[in-house]
Length: 498
Image (tube, rainbow, N blue to C red):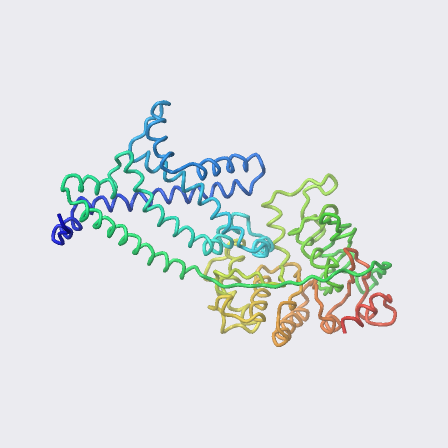
């Protein structure tokens, strides 16, 4: 009995196969949804303390290590004997969903890990709550890594529904088996079913391609670290009568220490910054400059010591007993410190104006239209009035950094922290960023700047801080720091930096 094209076309259009194809699709969609949600939960548990991590690891080990068919048969036959009767639909969705959850956990974890740390730190610097950071910053970026393997898993899920034929579930393969037996036309039936599977998977492949294209982004950053140099004697000038603001500082670090294994990132560092002061921190790479700056807004919590903002402890509800502030209150106070990162840390899924408007909208309760108008004004002030609708990937390095400055200014902070704002820029872009920063010094803003730009520091700094190997060794007025009255080691540093 040869192949009959007429019978093949008739079977291909059979209402039974059409209904079975629809069942296959919705079962795959629901099971994939269950598995994806479970995957996010398990990924969160994997990042939690051990008491949560071990159950997640055990679940993943069990469901990835046993065959899906065995799991289907277990839920179908063993559970009723244990007093948990399940219908065919519940059995199918439960077995497919749990199995998929184990595989999705690793996919989700990989996607979340693909988002660089500076993105989370930028959200913390704005004062966003961790859930806001996840929803607005991390998830939109992680999804671009998650979507491709998720799409491949869904393709597998469509085919995996065929295993439900083992428990007589009326999906596509089971119905085709019944048709083949009743019509005795196995060749035509199974060829028609194969075409149905191909059609479903082809449509999904096209959809997946569109989704991947929609979420695709490009980003890169590069930071280098050089070895520290030797320790030196400490030189610090006391505030003079013209520095009364330092007696009641806006920002103050008290005896901060921070260790990374055997390396001391901060070694008993104290610093005060008065209102309207511009303090520039210099030193060789790896000397603790960026660690100090990140400790000032407690993105990098110190092992000991305190940071005070407007006379009140930033991280501690009770500094004497080291009782930390609730995270919500820490985030609220952290908003008063704007931070500009060396790698820009713009949110790549948002336009320039959305980056700038995010903090005021989500944290200050400003209406969307007003926040966007204010963002446009700030972007115009930093010379990017024509780039408000551009995404970070469409901007040069210097333009991205100016957007980052506008974003920091949008929260109207008490002080601005700049972490090597020009280190990732080409020479042509540096001038534009330094020009914006120089304009800000003329507006009386309180600023702490970590930089390697010695010439810029000579022009705009009120005070010069010098650090080596985690220690603050020099704190002098600019007019003293760049003279022969400065310590020998600092003058040697200047000669090396050119």
